[in-house]
Amino acid sequence: MSQFEVARTSAFSLDALHWAFMNPQILESGAKLTPFLLPAPAKIGILVVPGGGYSGLATGHEGRDIAAWLNARGYDAWMLEYTTTSLSKAPLYPKPQNDALQALRFIRAQNRVQKLGIWGFSAGGHLAATVVTNPETRDAKQKLDFAILAYPVISMEFGVTHGGSRANLLGNAPDPALEKALSAQNRVSLETPPVFLFHTADDNVVPVENALLFSHALASHRVPFEVHVYENGPHGVGLAPGDKILSTWSARLEDWLQKR
Image: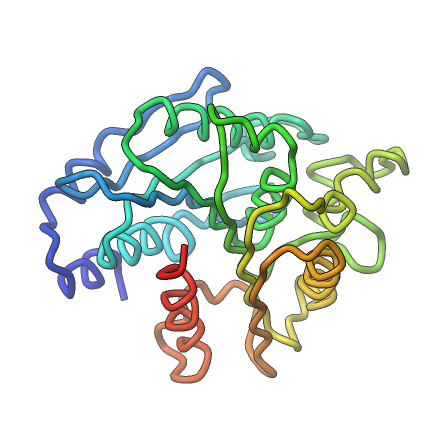
């Protein structure tokens, strides 16, 4: 289902969605931030961070389709096209993380939404997880109120991580201290905001251990969270519109978002 087919099911006009999509903002870092805004400001906005192993970006089913899904449910959305190895040499760190912080500052400066979340997929989930656990996002100028992580890369540790994401972000032989610091489960604190996680148990690209490690860290710090692990399903499904079982995860997310 395309972003326009999703939008047709809502009370919001396609004109507003199309207008917003045609006006991306180029941030100081060179990253591109595309707004998908409702005709009137929403109380809640979400920064959408597509996956792609830090080598490219799945801006369709993990980007524009997600923004349209959010618009149809009354949320403003922005899609971040952050630095990847398609445009910059590895190791990328800290460029993608700085891109995300700049995007948050830009959105907050608009004073359009009261609460702001981040929704990341796969490697974009790693970016979202490292940003939401960054103490800088407690500051009002770039504050995050919640995070959504879909089949996320969490750890940079060998044997658990996604090898391509690790190599692209940190290089082929990263410093062990940096590897540990960029493993998001080690960054959770009492101040980490609520998190929603979705993964499949037989994901053969990003092991489900990533979501479980992060969930355990959240539980250990008494951070509110909800995790949904489905028994079967491939990596990179997005909203899984063609799968009657996996597609139910978005309904669970919708319920969770209504509590924010």
